[in-house]
Length: 134
Image (cartoon, rainbow, N blue to C red; front, top):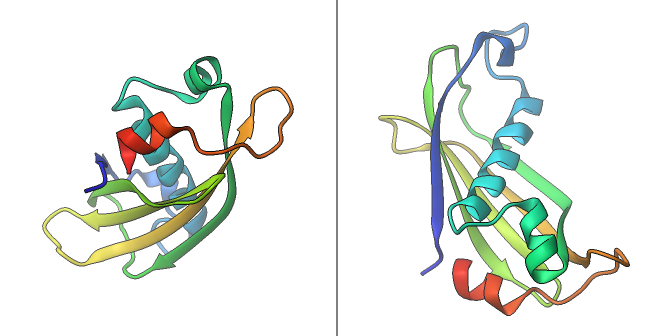
């Protein structure tokens, strides 16, 4: 079973658009934090994976399905997990759920390509990463 990282946030006023719901671009920040936390939960960060495994974590695709509007003061939980492991890439699944509501407010898939930290060329997903997260 894949490892699931979670964190909770409260929607802040500066995250709202003119319609008084969370601006779509804000979700990208939340997802980025979810991926960062996924690494941190196991003792890593974007810089340490360069030092430890010699790789970088490069986002190449993001898909978001917005299902319900989030409003000021809503408490949301962001869930992040590895959905699929390929040769040089992984697909990360995110789910954003308002506390108390079982239906997701948004779901996203983000494709990450592992690249060699020196050359920038795609490199196989580190086995250690797969063991820890998938």
